[in-house]
Every structure is written in C-alpha cells, then in structure tokens.
Length: 381
Ligand SMILES: Cc1ncc(COP(=O)(O)O)c(C=O)c1O
Image (cartoon, rainbow, N blue to C red; front, side):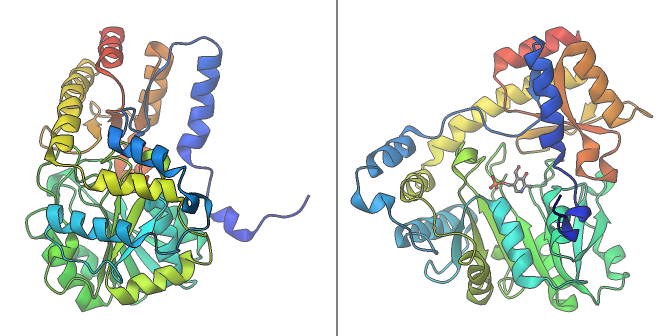
C-alpha cells in the first residue's frame, strides 16, 4: 500500500459522510427515516435561474474554460447585491472573487495566509471545516468558546489575554451556525478593533443572513474593516442553490489577489451556465426572500413543536436554517440522537459535531416539508 500524507492523520472523515452511510443503510433495510440532519435546501431555485442555465447551454461560449475571476457581469451583480442588501461598496474588478461555494474559500484563504505553525482562532461551537482546513494546512487551531449566556458571541476580553503572537486568522460566522445567533450590536466594530490591535485577519463566514432574518449585516460595513477583514457569502441557502456551488469572497483588493493566486492554480473557472444562473439569482427582488421565509417560518413552527415533544428548549429569536435546541439536563447529544434514530427513525444532528460546546444540544434542519415534519411530530408523540 502507498502511504498517505501525514496531513491526513490530522483530520477524520466528515461526520455526515460517515453517519449518512449508517442512515442510508437503515433506509436500504426499509426503515422510513426522516432526515433532519443536513442543511441542504430541498426547494427549487427561482425559475428564472433555471431558465438562465438552460438557455446558456446553446451559447458557443458556454463550453469553454471560463475566466478565473468569473464573468465581469457576475462580479458586477455581486457588487450590486452587496450594496443593496448590506450597504457595502465593493469594486467589482478588484474586491470580489466568485467561488465554487463558500466552503472552498475556507481552504483558499487558509492556503493564502497560513504557514505551518501559525495559529487560527476558531469558534466552538462552529462549522467543523474551519478546524479541519486549519489542520490540513499545518496550522494550529485555537478554539474560542461561545456561550448561550453571551448570545454565542466571542469573549474578546478573554481572548485578548491569550498569547496571540502566532495567530494569523480568526474565523467568525454571523449569523452563527449552528446556533442561529445574530451578532451583538457592536460585535463587528469590536472585532475590527481587535483585528487591528492584534494584527489578525478576521473572516466572517456569512451564508445564512437571508434565512429567517430581515436585517442583513456585513462585517465590511464597519469603517476601515477592509484592511483586516474578509467576508464569505454563498448562494447555497439564500437561493436554494447548494448543489450549484456558487459563493464569493469579498474584501480588500490585496487580499483578493492573494486568494486568486491560490485559486487560479486549483481550478479553471466556474461553468458559464452556473454563472448565468447566479446572476439571475442575485437580481431577485424582495419577494423571493419573503416567499422563502414564509415557508421556513411555517416549518420552524413545526420543528419547535417537535423540539417540545422531545423536551428540548430553544431560542425563538434565533435565525437561520436550523433550530438549535438544548436537551434536558445531563443528556448526551450523541446518545440522544442515536435513540431518536432507533426509536422514531428520525435523524437529527448531535451538537457535538460542532465542537465540545455543542454537548447537550441538538440541531434540527428546516430542509424538510411540513408533511414530513408533521409525521415526525406524530412519531415522537
Ligand atoms: C457556516 C457555514 N459556512 C459555509 C458553508 C458552506 O456553504 P457553501 O455551500 O457555500 O460551500 C456552510 C454549509 O453548510 C456553513 O454552514
């Protein structure tokens, strides 16, 4: 056998990749599993998006390699989208780089900025990719704890007391996944000041701002933030386009050109039809978001009932594509979800997937129809 690279010893197969094998085996054995685990939107993108990709296929340019930076029209539309929704001005020529989903941006940014031994501040609980990518590039994760008592906001005073001399990047993610917490009023200002003081690049991963939330916020709206901040955004959840793989990284032109150095050596541009579809999505009017959120609101009401039936508690102010629920005292997340999977054939994500601070919590996805959710409630009751 050919020996694998050492870096593979630093990470494990993604939790969902392993667990979904188990869930699929149950399905293959005829068990009627309801999957409330993963946040993959089940509704269609806007029809004009589907029309745009369909029509693009006859264009002779559609099948060629595409620009590494994406179509100028795509970047212009992304710039207008940021202006309209986040009140942030971005130069489409230099301050925006389209990505194949925001997830790849986590790797590109890490490769562009981290050397072996550098340290990275990572939220606990948080999206597991920040930690695994940090390890894959040979850097060291420094987990900072988030707590419900502080609205899942970083305790910058406590973090400032650490030795931050080797810290190069801090990942933040507001609105926060998995908890659905919005940023506290002055959090972005405080983060920018913190980044400047300690010479750290802060990246706000912002894919959930349109789901069950009317007030879109960007860290780049803080004066002077571009020097020390980047933001990732994504069409996956906002426009039901998770499988299309479209996102963006935005920020200062120097940062963007550093990331482009990595990315242009890794892929050869995004498929033309996907870019054409993305342009149409980004131009959607307010009506799209209202309709999308009406559906998610109805589903969330049902998920709250399901959580009640499981004796869990949750924050009704939370936003996003998930309900983050606290288990009754002393129950362990993984034992709990295994029992619900066995007894009720419902798959829910254990909070521990997002770090040790997720112990005692579970995460329900809103990516299931009302009929399915009603069936889930009936099974538990
Ligand atoms: C916090 C967070 N960031 C990034 C992503 C990746 O999204 P994308 O589909 O844009 O790669 C996800 C997806 O679940 C996420 O939850």
